[in-house]
Length: 118
Image 1 (cartoon, helix red, strand yellow):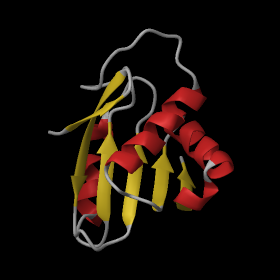
Image 2 (image 1 turned 90 degrees about the vertical axis):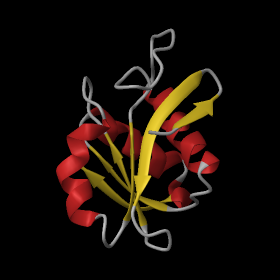
Image 3 (image 1 turned 135 degrees about the horizontal axis):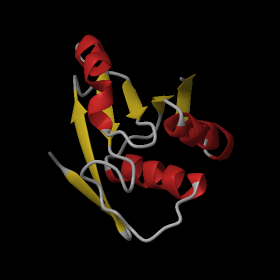
């Protein structure tokens, strides 16, 4: 699986689905990794481009010096989107991922088409 080098963090991600399709980003909860979204990705990958990633300090992403903040974790998402040339996405987050989504909707609302909070 690919990694994005984003400043002091190495973020593990998986991008799949039709290149021309709308992008849905799935953000994991505390203590989980992107695999928690496997069933949703399998159901949606034929109609959407699916981006799943391991939040900093989770899964295969780097464990950097803490403490972490929602601001920092959300900026990781913005930087990941930039590195993949993704300008506007649907964002789905569970728990901590939902807080990241709320930050994105407030601070970079032009990047978020739809926001799904779980």
